[in-house]
Image 1 (tube, helix red, strand yellow):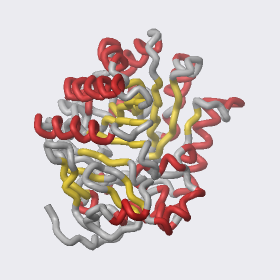
Image 2 (spheres, helix red, strand yellow):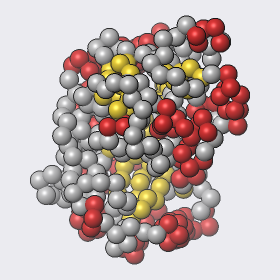
Image 3 (spheres, rainbow, N blue to C red):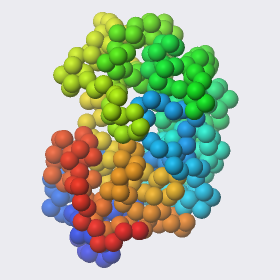
Length: 367
């Protein structure tokens, strides 16, 4: 952290107690720093940075509950250049860099993922104290063995892949854009990775709804048989939610109490007496959302900079625009509401700052 005199030399674009500058550096005033000792230092430390990158917002799937509108395509070269320069600037004082690939389906633009990741690896070689980890949220359709090898070679070794049930259930909701099935291709890719020696970790995100909860048993049996013996695989159960999209009104949402009961039931079916296994991931593993952290940003395919991968089309989520020289053109007043959980030590806002986000931001100007 900078001292008080150094902070006063920064040309802040707003008067927040927690802020960032054009290089993504965090600045916290003394009064706020004194309150933050009870929160993980990783959440507001300049030596740690998590960057979400959306190289495209197109997708080869049309999942029935998806909230995205696929209006943005492939990231342009000037945005790719800006990302490289931004990472180069941030690497000067980093000890830990996590780059998370999102979309759309990021592996549609595998070449962009590889290009930026190769550049990051070159920076890691010259910053010997920097630890780097890359991860991808992917539908798994393009994650064949050859692709997994290429990604592992450039430090991308963690994956989150969603399944909605056994083949007959999954293929009704996770559908290709051309209407064809997806389960068999994903499962084949997962088995190929399992049969390899690749140093990867895969989180299987198992979706369920009111209609499918009782239909998941065959998938759970197959996961138990094929993957649970491999420490590289873990499982997370997630109820389908209404997050937007054309089919939002038709989604049947679990009441909170019933949802938690359903998750426990699924965990017991899959893990049995080993329900405390490290392969059983739960929401409580991450009590502070990435969007609540000042050292976490997303860069969309068009260069918009935001905080949340769900609120992509919410104007409040645009806090800056990435410039080709790697600097951020910040929008005054847009960042502070996302960080109110840390500033106010509010558990609800820390868990999801989008819930309760002020409907009107106190902006001085917009881009």
